[in-house]
Length: 328
Image (cartoon, rainbow, N blue to C red; front, side, top):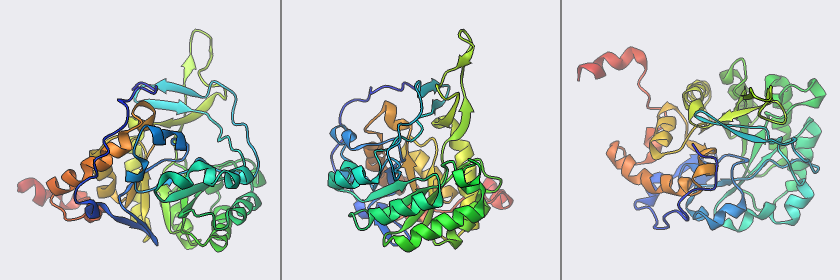
C-alpha cells in the first residue's frame, strides 16, 4: 500500500443503478447507502477528487471545544498491511467549526456526522451544546480520547464515565448520537450495551488498534509520539470479530470500521452484523475508493441474491449450522 495521493483522479460519477437498493437506517438517520468515511480520514478538500454526494454520509474530523495542535511529527508511517498514525486529533475548536459552516462540510450535498471529542465530560457537553442546530445529521461521540478526569485512560474503558458523557450528549442533541468505541476494551459487547443504555442510536466499531514501528538504524520509534494507531487491511479480521460481538449484544445498529477497501469488504462487515461502514486508510492511496465502492454495491447485492443491501445485515451462519451448508 502506498500512502500517497496517487489515485487515478476523480472517481466515476455515473449514478449507481437501483440506488434505492442501497438504503440503510441508523436509528432515525436514513442514508442512501451504507458508505461513509471514518473520522480523521476525510476532509472537504477531497470533494475535488471524488463525487462526495454519492456517499451515504460524511464524518468530520473530531471537533474539540478549544484549539488543539496535535502530536509532534512524524505522524504517519507505512507498515505491512496498513499504516500507523499518531496525529493526535488536531482541532480548530468548536467556534471555528461553526464559523466555517461545519468546517466546510455543510456544502458537500450529503448528510454530515460531526465527530466530537473531549478530555472531560464537560468538554463533550460543551461541544454538543455549541453545535446546537448547525444542520448536521448526527453526532459521533469519540470515546477513545484520553479522559483526564480519570487518569488519562480512554473514556470507554470506564463504562460509568462513558455513559455519563453519552447520556449528556444525547439530551443536548436533537440529532441521533453514535458512539465510536476503542478496540482495547475488555468487552466490546459490554461497552456497546452501555452506549445503548445511555441512549446511543448506533455504535461505531472500531477505532484504530494500538501499535508501534521502530527505526532500527536510528534506534527510535518511527513516530514522533512513539506509539500510534494501526489501521488498514491488516486489522480487518480483528475489526470483523469485534463488529460481530457488538452486533450480537445490542439492538441498535453497528457501524463497522477497519480495513475496508472494496465492495466485498463492505458486504463482509454487513454479514457480520454491521448496518453501515466507514472507510479510512484506503482513501490515502485511492481518494475515489468510496465512490467506487458505492458504484459496485448494486451489482454485488444482486450477485449475492438479496433485494436490498440491508438484507445482508447479520446473516452470518453460526458454526454449529454449517454442516448443512457443507453438504449442499
